[in-house]
Image (cartoon, rainbow, N blue to C red; front, side):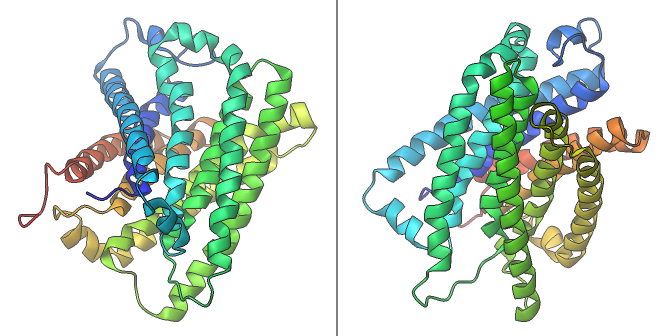
Length: 370
């Protein structure tokens, strides 16, 4: 199979699946420290906890395996002739270059969450280690700026070429949201004042840049689709769901950073944090309902088929984003057993969908004529 940076979506989906149980336990299970660890579950491993720990362990291991595998394939691809140069010069497909950045941003969150959970000694050292972690985070931020400028120029200056953009075009917004979330995690966990301040500044920059691009590109896509009067091709229909994890990333990033911007920068955005979580959760539910109705035939007839295409990973990311927002609302704004039950159900459903898509991705399930 010819390599594409979109293959990193597999690592992104597995990392998101690993985070789902961690977020649920972090906010709803009793814990002794700042981060929940496996020690906090000693003597309390009931079936529900065993299910969450099992999903988190398998998904975390798979995430690091896929990150390593895709990174090696990416390096080989980048050195093989003009493939990478040709890919980056094509404004209709080069947005896929943001997939590795999104996946690496997810790796930061997996390290701060699931990995810290399984290694309590590491968990206790995370705040101090982040004094050094700010440097690779800042490097990843700088890489994203460089890639955004380089690729963005091909979208603005196309030499008269006509390009039809689809919702995959929001992958750069996804990347900025992921970097914002990683930065918020660094800021929240760090004990060093300078690290926390640097993290909060970079996070606010990532949020601002990402939302700016989100507004412009999102409006463009909506208007373009209305004016075209036709729906997207079947392999591109699941890409519409990228809106939900993007909403989650920015909502949680704003929520996490609110306390620290007031503490370190004197900027009070707590009211914006509340609005971002609640409003973006409501908009995500509306968007899922809208897309579910619009693409019901795809769910009935196309998704069960063995054919694989990268946009299918978006179905896992939808559930990751929705579950995380549901937990934050349950814990901070409106306690509801319905939201808690939905979180468990969404983890099980995300695991099932991931397994099915992954088996298609690696070729265990494949079309008869393949």
